[in-house]
Amino acid sequence: MKNHRFELIGNKLPSGRVLFASADSKYFLKFGPALIQSCIDFDQPLHLHLINQTEDAAHLKTLVTDNYPTISFTSESVDLSGTDERTYYACNRFIVGYQVLNQCDAAMILDIDNFLMNKVQWHTEDIGLFLRDPLPGTVGWEQESTHVAAGIVSFTSAKGKEYLKDVSNQIKSYSNLQWFADQNALWKVYEKNKDYLSTFVYNNSIMDWEFKPDTMLWTGKGPRKYDDPTYVSKDKELKERLNESLHTKTKT
Image (tube, rainbow, N blue to C red):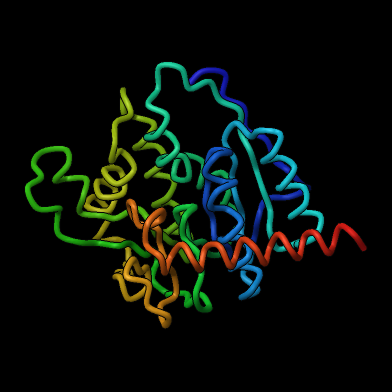
């Protein structure tokens, strides 16, 4: 990536136990508000990292940080010419995660189109991964890369932070970013260190794409974020509540 510039917004990086996601401005504006409101609902600190923020994204970020001190931001400016942008956006939270989250006791790294439905339950193992069998019909790179779903990854220890650092370095080592690079790195580093790390295994009773009310986290997996009426309705309700609260606060 050319002309990469990383910027801290605010006076300090996040600490304690935080949720973390990153996105370009388009995805942040579309899906970020629901995640933000869900974290406000459950008093859960959240840190968001913005890639090449637009004026509209910067405006929303300022409104949120001025009114909700548990929501924090960093941002970066990066020239993505010659890079597959979709893959970079998917990998970004793992590329910058160690740098952003180094002061945290624990962190849960999510897709931006996830939101909380219930209070976060923190595990005690070094890392948490959504491990699974490779997707049917895959071979080679895709088979290796689909042992892990990257929608939720977490750490709760110093060894877990080192895992995240190694994942970042693994992604950076690829000469050409291609789809599944994040999941490939998560799996390779896990395979190398699994005897050294204790691992909590997530499943869809925690990160849920069937949208059951008693699960911790709903995720807009694939086209569901656009066409599943249960997800879309909840996403809309969360966004509207955030907009209403920000409007009220800015008028007082």
